Length: 414
Ligand code: 0X9
Ligand code: ZN
Image 1: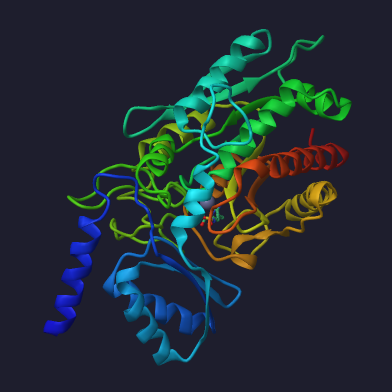
Image 2 (image 1 turned 90 degrees about the horizontal axis):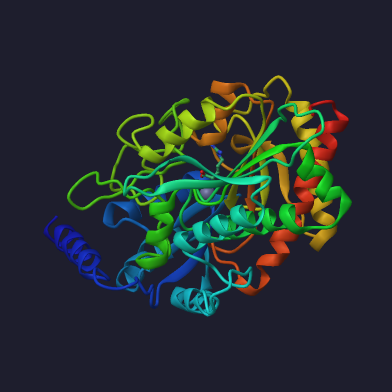
């Protein structure tokens, strides 16, 4: 018991001492992949979590990916040896991934898609294009964050002859702070809608009113830029030491039912103190609820490479599930043509990923009845994607959107 306490104390000490004053380096953190049945992997994970809050872990397809700090490496190896599981190191030194990615941080003053940008730069980009295309775009504010930032989006609504209101397509991106490829891809897509001369893309742009929000968790995203690359949650204060809730577990539908925790110190999936406890989800949900004529809600995440439909905590199929799957398949076919990349799905998260309640997509479907509701999990490895290849996913997503709305219109949703 005393030894156990000493280990815990030394780990707590380590966690507090590290990186209070500088960007967390993740020097010598190892990314492991462990194979085994889900039950065994869950029990292993539970044991590990008794000792320390893990910055990243995910169990899928009977494989556990887990990021292990150098000071618990030998402990991890000892626990693993008790289980006799096939284990390999996928990344030897996680800080190398961060270093490579950093080489693509903003280098010059022009906004581009060969680097990652912090939230102020993204907002500046949105502000600039809203001025450049002032006849048919404008900035919109979808909500506010705990630290007082706005959730800024771009509304794109080209004029029509009939002057009738168009159906709205809402795009949510960056709800998980560390999934950097999602805001980057979303601004890439905005740029395509604004500048492409491809008649299919301009026709898609003109057909709908677009409301596109690249960073709906601006505090978390900024924190992942300035303090901790693996940060996922919001930045609200829960206890003296523990901050943030998972903004994709905090929406008021089946809150905390599956795949979420009530422990505010959990690094990944704390659902918040109550549904909509987070200012970001509360204000954004109010904004969404006030939208008339919402046709589609599309959320972008990374990096499971799959397309998900509601409900994330159920294997039951909603009334237009067959249509959603047909439309989703066409979307994935269009995307496949760009880089030959196959996505899993369309299916519910419960069917092909894991059960997760309290997510935005599910609430939107349940509360507003929006007919087309999707979550795209983009590509990557433990949330990293080389900045000089953002355009690959940008082009893929642009085509996936084209496929989605082409098939949706074929099925008379438009
Ligand atoms: O766990 C999540 O929230 C998503 N996966 S991620 O690795 N990007 O964190 C899956 C979301 C699917 N479920 C809902 N949209 N509710
Ligand atoms: Zn996510």
